[in-house]
Image (cartoon, rainbow, N blue to C red; front, side, top):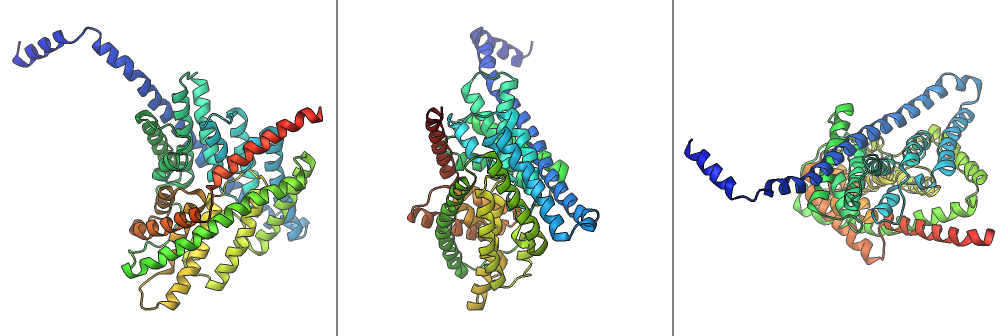
Length: 465
């Protein structure tokens, strides 16, 4: 027997007999949580990635119908109106008939579930959000796919908890958070942003622990790997990569952030105001709700024909802006127009998110700001596209109030890692000024509004009876 073997044998003889068993028994729960979070991430990646492909397929099919068959039978404008109205009708009907909690972004629902105040009925949310989102986004409405993927990811986390009969509330909470992170990572090919979104934006609800943060990371990474296996590893937004700006130009980025901080407060209030207006219009009656939604979808079908820049989520529109295809005046007009279309679409209760439309708004105003700044300060070696990227992050910071997430999201989506300093400065300015003007995070506002409406509805039920 060697000296090493003798030492090992004598050491093990001093260890309590059940020490190893105790260690393994304590380690089983974390390993099982990590395995389940891996499963959640893979499923969230599959659902999120194919949701994007499904929306793209519907959009392409709608265009082919207009060009080939229906366009030959009806006037082009009428065919566009009918097709988009029908697609929107599908989205609104599925939501109102089967899963009202699938309306809008869905992120506040996940935050409420993490706080234990909202249920997660995954068996109806996942199909309704998937197919309803296909209809609403495919109609040309100004909505993003990130909200649906986060809600579907969270629902998948709860589904895995139920399927495997997870009893621990902490574990169920971790899987719910993991699904949300995986959903965002799959929506934008942004794993770091997916992780930070849960840790930072959902910080009031997220139960931070070593196990939960590991679960979130594993889910986001696995969901992103699935996305890249299917879609490739390129950044979601194709645009130039810029060098770091001169230090003398950093003050302009701070000023841009201040402007976005003020606008972010106004934008959030416009969203809730739009929601209240639509509630007054349809009064939660299915017939009114479907007619309103279908007419809205038809309107965007027409807009898609004549002013396509005002339709869609805006991710595909961002490269056109940053390539310098528009003047500052046109960009500002499009910015105003897309404020209206974004507020109307999201406020209507259609199953879609607001991330992508906000990024488009930030790009429009940021690039216009860059063009104006370049004309006023020609001595500074600046590119307008730098301000477009900074604007994307600034509006996200001002409205969602999650600056680290916004910075990481923009960097991962565009690949512009050299702009991290101006992004931090712009985001910081946006957050500070949004707080100064009394703004609240958009998802907190939406969750509070949902809870308030739910309480009022329950109070009205005894009176109706």
